[in-house]
Length: 248
Length: 288
Image 1 (tube, each protein chain N blue to C red):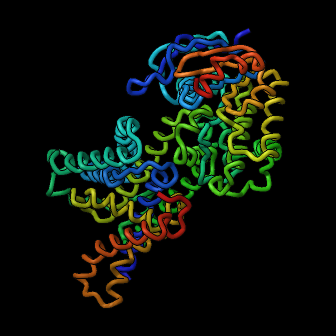
Image 2 (cartoon, chains in turn red, purple):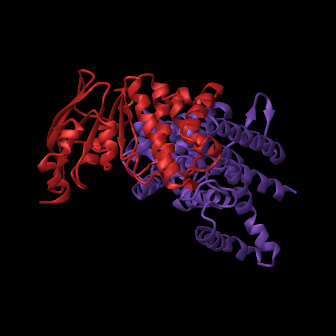
Image 3 (cartoon, rainbow over the protein chains, first blue to last red):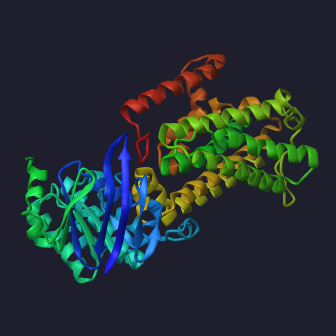
């Protein structure tokens, strides 16, 4: 059953068609890969889906609800959360505060009268231990290595799920890029665990080995359009997909 | 001794202004250059209510806070359309508009003639007409503003403000409507500056537009940059230093008339040196 339908989505930048009349359906509870060469529109698609940039045309159906205009602060309420390709942490805040900030109350007046409590600390500790960063909890995020920053961002994404209760859709934009092998294993196990919990994962990734290993279904994008879709083993062997990556 | 008391009162007023601006600039990352407009609105509201209606000081301050909050709310709606440098320029524009209103709405503000004869406060039967008693009042209000601000920055709300400063789009994705947060802190900050204005009007007993120029907003900005962004104690330290600066200059041998003028030059030099070598200020936790 599709949890997310994208209908005729378009986004142009000064005449460049980053996403061009894209329509696709994401099935619930599966890991769906989105691949394509650099500049094919994958990150633009995720940024539009999460309200970071507005689309020119098209709409979404999320959990059966038609959504035309997505605002970034609404995506959590549609059950979505995400990581960013370029790692967007709160740099001059501690590792612990990067997590606590997404665990606490959303409404301004409620947040004003709330101090972080033991419950939030326990949750933050659990997640930071999972991504191997508990020892770094008092460090400023800006002082972490690139891999650690990626792990913290994934931890922050997991923390969101605990607060809003039901984020069902996790958007991961190149979560493995630049990670050491032991960090790749951590992220892999987190993604598998999310799938076991019945969550839907949309994974943008360039590592075809990981795409083959993790994904149930793959969409291939090229020049903003859908080039191919299907099971990874089949799609990755298609001539047009190989050509799109390697050139003719 | 009277002069020391005078400096201590001015220090309290500028420390309140510094703390209030730090909430917006240091904690939330909004480069607002309009604090003297709110300072002026608070001062004028209190002065007009005290001189023209004979209202009690306490109620005139409360009304002054409400008027400042309403004006800042309306300005905040417009400023929410801007980001970064454009925000600074927009707030700069508002400062000029408000100053022009002080100067030109003569039927209300008496324009360049100013408003004389503002009474000193009498609160719950206590008379603050003596400078020493006024000093106690000013310091009590400073303490209240400090503790309210500390409560804000240590709450979950304060943590979200810092996240907005670091990456507004990123925190929005986690379900935070940042407009509400920015608007709340902007209004709270303006209201605090309004309190400082009320204190100033009542202390000097005369106000005119020349106190509430853009220069004053830059002076308040200098306080928080010198003391330290995103650090409340830094604002107090900055106010202390810049209020005492002319005295320090006089102490090292500058004649009185030159010391006052040199204040501008020296705090300009200090700002340049800080931006070059210590952009987070003396005890700050955030670099512009």
